[in-house]
Length: 184
Image (cartoon, rainbow, N blue to C red):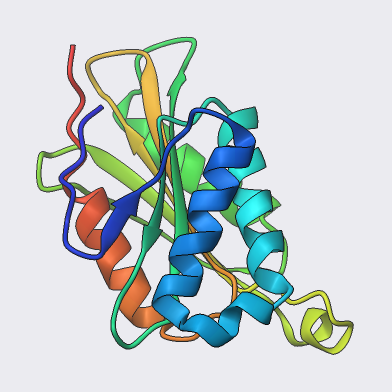
């Protein structure tokens, strides 16, 4: 899978969980400002994304930065599927996400990339109850891009730990997803 590296997206090393975590945390602090080095959420968010990326065999971990947003954390995984995705699989996947996603999934949409690949996008925004309980995990977008010519999908996940500037990050993420290109 190929992605265009757009301005505002900085990939980090996937050599080890520790290195990925360190680089993610350093970039978060760089973009949020030196005071954020004291924010206990920074290393927690960096660690969670680093572990998820490594546990799932990610081929990409990165920080998304926009001047009007706190940085977001991105990882991408190429997943082999039992068969080549069919056109009806897009609608089935969308329904499955809508039905099983719970209250945090606020929207599920389907579209196509600039290269014509079908995509299902799910948006999760933390509900008021989680904020009141102190379990705020920010906002998340997950894009599942289907390859109609091979048994595989690309799963790209953006997490915004603070939710500040969410629309700017979501736009940058959408621009990135539109560049997905499966290679043979």
